[in-house]
Length: 105
Image (cartoon, rainbow, N blue to C red; front, side):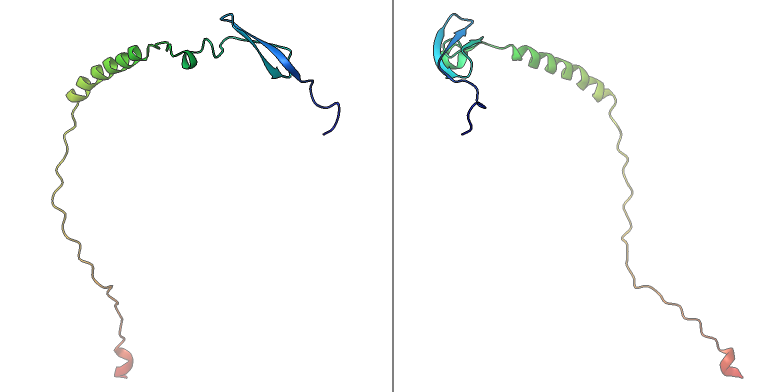
């Protein structure tokens, strides 16, 4: 390992969280300030914060319900196609022109 190219390592770097918790870790920075830590994060504490996704889903369903009656009014009439005639494939016809005048002389 080359010397003097790596940053200085602090074995007891202090971490300060916005919730007031503090602890020490190893880092290349002496002091680390964070907004969320393992003591206040919902995943670790078990206290989930409810995000209002249900409101967004309800708004989407309401918009979708408004559009459905409009589509019902503009129902397209499908044209019934006449029965298709069966296609009969035949071998190609080769026409050969025979010149009878040459034989008559």
